[in-house]
Picture 1 (cartoon, rainbow, N blue to C red):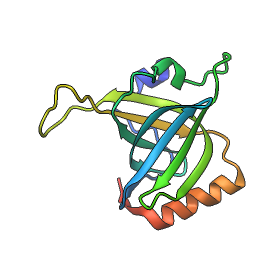
Picture 2: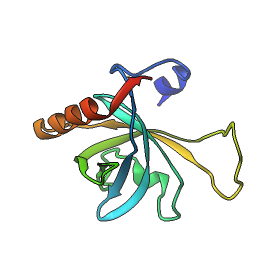
Picture 3: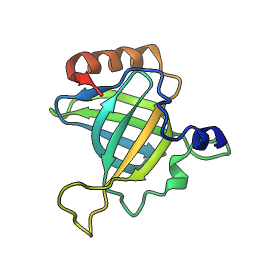
Picture 4: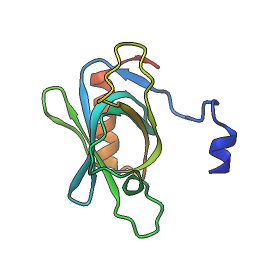
Length: 141
């Protein structure tokens, strides 16, 4: 954790990020519970970022996989057409922060951005991710 804090503000990603040209939805699950649901902002071979509105059932503690007996966190990505673009990917939450809005502010709606890292992708998941990037990637972020 000290390394992350010491490097704040520095680019830590090793994979090139791509913006998404159409809407794609990230769905995070812990066990059988949906904990976060939001719009994918950018994606790379190593992870992605998505914006979401927190639900009361989502706790930040539940979204951290540290090997200390917590249930695994799984990501699914749905394309704009509702097709499953990526399924059952184990992830690690890297960041989860409030967004500061430049536009209209709705005091009752607090949007957050969550950054996640993929963990141990299977060959099938790598293929799904590659197909998703080919179909959805529009530009480097």
